[in-house]
Length: 282
Ligand code: ZN
Image (cartoon, rainbow, N blue to C red; front, top):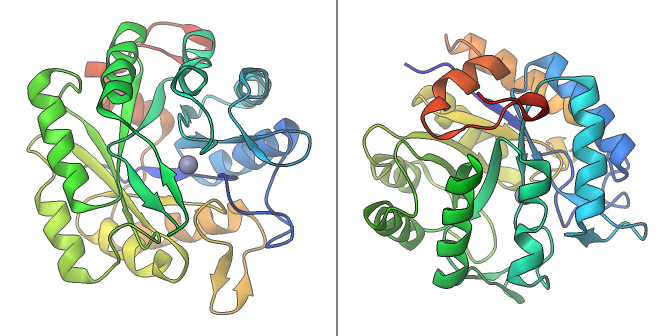
């Protein structure tokens, strides 16, 4: 079984300091939180940024500052979002990629009604442009799957050559508008991960612990962090991103999974991840 990849998603788009004061917002806070999570065993950092009003943004300068600060502290694998602001146009969603050359970037594999209130646009045209840009720049896409049909779209993009195997999938359960969680549905989606590909999963909010446990049992990785879940347990807010990583690492070890380091991830993903720490070739 593959080593367990623990991804930290420290900030996200929607969680605020009012919801949980531990959410890191500024580039310095995000970098410090990621560094602590790296020391606790996280091997990939999934990065969103906020503007000075603490609102989600795709401002390239904020990504540059945040990623530089993280790279000064550690060699965690950087995975930047391309969906950090639901109102952003296609071009700004990709503008940071050629500058930062992160090792990974998200590829949200379809359009959905987000939170029953907004539309998360990922047109076929955008996804084809993003997939080609990732290949040109040596960025490994993290293919995010919020619902069953998105897996079919991913299989189509593999056939088209827009995504190249082995693909890394992030399976997401419990978003409003996406697939909810029960073990049978989760297993049905895991079974559809194409052969030879890797996967990780997370459940939003109350699904956090069951999805993490199933993922670690079934050979996947787990994503944790205040982007997805602001609680540690029922009614108790998480003290920090680190606390959530520490639990994931403990759980993985109890389930007899070896936890991947950042260099393990580089080795696992080297077929289509050409960028490296500080811009070196992998
Ligand atoms: Zn995200």
